[in-house]
Length: 135
Image (cartoon, rainbow, N blue to C red; front, side, top):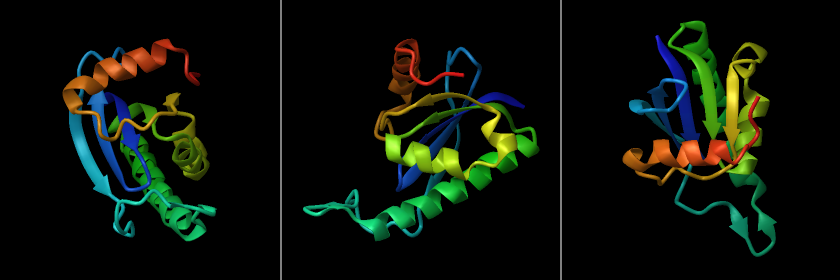
């Protein structure tokens, strides 16, 4: 069993890494794409956030929450660190079943989806040291 799953996501994709609690190194576990996501726009127009785009991202958050819950139940991961832009992080937290939500040991409200894996562990340690919403 991997000690910690680091879930780095936004509304279009997700990278999941395994690590120890100290984030000394990250091992890729899986990559997920939002199959309903079209294009690379972030759903923002001159009038504000596009509600249909947000609905697509909310559906992806629910799918991702299901994957996290499955991993917790199968004992593939003990703890979860969520890293996502603030809005998607809220959607993801809202979609997690209680048993999985209880395993979330940290939240980093940042978009680190484009951060190369070799830089990610250091960026996460830095973000966590800034006392983002930790349990």
